[in-house]
Length: 113
Image (cartoon, rainbow, N blue to C red; front, side, top):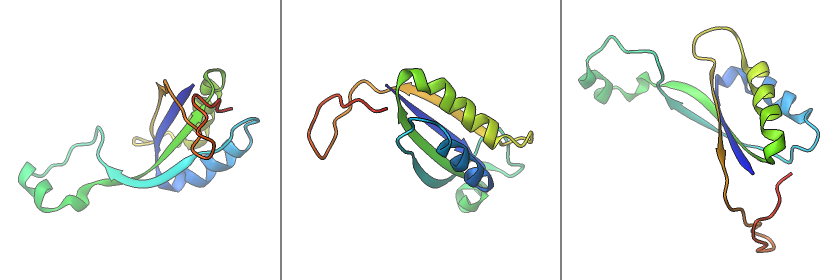
């Protein structure tokens, strides 16, 4: 099982969610708003960054637990639907999820499909 984590532009979230709904077998996603910084650099001093934390860029974070054989399709769907061709489109990662427990039943290593 894998966890797919994507950081995308907030204005692309609707397009990405719409595209994810089209994937057969995807059981759900978790989405939250965030802010941060990436490859861009501030022209200001580090002290200014500490005084004005509003310099961070907004992003949407999407987390999806999926089977190993679905990971590539989920990542491709996110990339295609979030891409604007401009800097700051975001990143998509996949990481291994060693263990899962379904909370409502206590079933260990519940298969996420």
